[in-house]
Image (cartoon, rainbow, N blue to C red; front, side, top):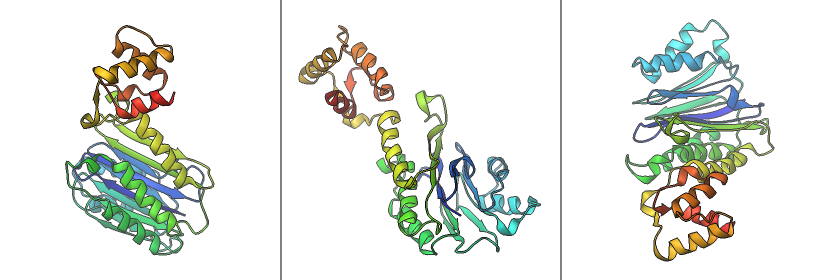
Amino acid sequence: MTFSIVARSADGRAHGVAVASRFLGVGAAVPAASAEVGAVATQSYANLAYRPQALSLLSTGVTAAGAVRALIAADDGPVALRQVGVVGAAGDGATFTGAECVPWAGGTAGDGFAIQGNMLAGPQVVEAMEVAWRASSSAPGSAADDRLAHRLLAALRAGDLAGGDRRGRQSAALYVVAKGMGYGGTSDVWVDLRVDDHADPVAELGRLLDLHTLYFERPDPATLLPLTGAVAEEVRELLEKAGHGQADLDVALADWAGIENLEERLIPGAIDPLVLAQLRGR
């Protein structure tokens, strides 16, 4: 009934899950992750207890494969109908598909990821997701390494385009954690987006991720424009037209940005080109 990918970033700093299904609010049931520990997706007659159990096992140093074995061994429910994927802080991910999961059902796993699905259009769904995931791989420290959410979404989109859930579409979710990467640096939840009931949930999830990137991602220091010279003059003029004419330009910009929900992109003495584009658009 569901297809998902659990994975970590190339530098091991971020962990996350992307999932879609012909099921209402799949994001409420399937994904869980803990910063610097790992991520888990439980589906197909999902045992929601797998989420805290898997993360607890991973936090003690148990491998993803060991966590999956332990989950299945301790489950006194219909294991033959369960499906789960787990990835830890290091090593290969692991996936399990019960023998009685509705076909097509199966999964694949490798270094830092696990992909699984049941009641799918066919094995091409999982295959397409793996191809997309591997195609987006990057070396630790590269710019793409900070974009695990986008890599997860690319894999999910590939599975959706390959047929996805054979019953159709309804919901999708994206959940990513990394130490201190949440709003204001006070949370580890980097991305937490859900589309609970939509005709094209994966596409809608992509739209929401674009908005999340604009409003909540931190600016790239290499692209910042110093608030001096012509840039400062333009920003001051635009802010005055918007009703923010304070003498201190940083204060005026912060006042406007707070109203526009762009405060996460503020750097004193500079302006993010994305913020400038939004200011110009207003």
